[in-house]
Length: 131
Image (tube, rainbow, N blue to C red; front, side, top):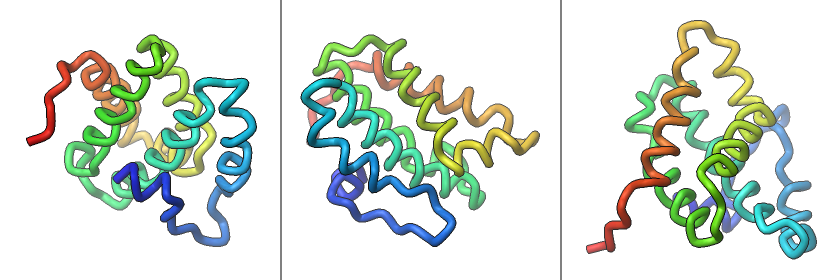
């Protein structure tokens, strides 16, 4: 899923948050900020996965865990601490309309906690080579 997202295959409507600024900054800011590429991928990934959750898909079936596994592996390879990754994820949730919408729903209050728990689990999970 992430490869499609990083290739720019994200559907947007007129009232969506425009991520083109993030994509444009990726080339220049990646040199000065090692987290820039990861920040952009997290936003794109969370946007898609949170849309699924908001549409009623259970969080475990949203694709979120698989994407967090890939993001966690990338963070480890680039020597980011788990805490740094969690800050990037929380910042992305706060920046995206889907994240704010999810946080505003009282019946979904635990979703961010689930997301953070998944991110920690996947960051520290042993790397399993693909079959």
